[in-house]
Image (cartoon, rainbow, N blue to C red):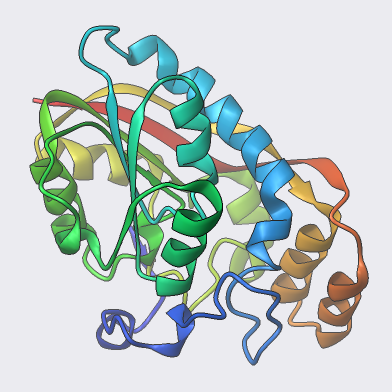
Length: 257
């Protein structure tokens, strides 16, 4: 496990990295946050549909009905899960994101951290690009474990620091992204972490590519090379969907023992 951010600062839920501008068009100092998350709906939903296709074989038709998405943002993943008959609930630190999800999608949500999540129990708990934000990944997973029913599914998607892309780009690897990201895991470290917290591994793989908006891709490049010029260019580009191979992200699916 690679720690990349100050733990005390990162643990403060009121810090400016997660204010109500986090999911909006932002190129503030440090270029933290997203390129207008709502406008990235199309590529995000395409990626989420692919993710659901990976989760689906592990579902039980009789019991896999309820989903808690921790770090749900605007709820696009939950909306896609709802389309296949799931009862869904979202949790996010951004009050703005939860309000948007409830108003625009009609999906109920809770504002807060992992320990603020509803008790459940849920059949599926997902953390998509979230565990890297957690100042204490062990406590984070303990909170998720408590919200799952016995034999429930845990789904984690996060960066992998033992990939070719991570080694190739080194300190410029886009997934490091401090102070938003606190810790990045190797595949071995993540497997050990979930095993130590009471989960049995079902599937673990590297995601070869994602679909992203062209503007968001340039925002990532701006962060990698600390280029304000690329950042300004990103804000002017359309959200044209392009496939981007990166082999940087790991998908882990496990079952609560």
